[in-house]
Figure 1 (cartoon, rainbow, N blue to C red):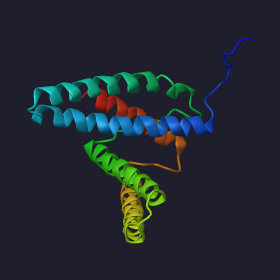
Figure 2 (tube, helix red, strand yellow; figure 1 turned 90 degrees about the vertical axis):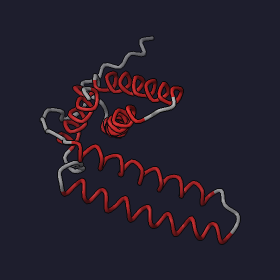
Figure 3 (spheres, one colour; figure 1 turned 135 degrees about the horizontal axis):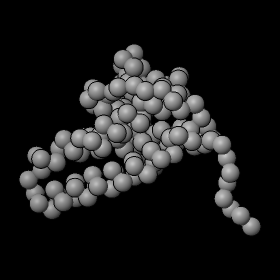
Length: 161
């Protein structure tokens, strides 16, 4: 039995997962490359270098799937503000997930209430960051073609830093 799929393009849901991974890894790659020269501890510096190498490898492999994404075509030019905003958005997304998870693991009512308050704050922060990115063209959420092209540009820019 042949397990190899013969599809013309990626499915929509996997295209969005691909987008999330490439966007997140590209933003982190740029941040880690900027930070590397400032890391003084040799062991930590080696960990940063290994992480950078791993991210570069992952991004290069993932970019090979972009031509298979539905509607992939357009070209855009992100700048470093896009990377910085993407780092903030990634942090906000992780905060929302972490607080939501912490709430499900908390028995102490006062702590749970504090976590809930922080979760609402994290959601509000995520909204503000998303709105900034959307309004400035760094996250074209309603245009898949432009979103994917933006990913490729950001990934290539991070790889070439």
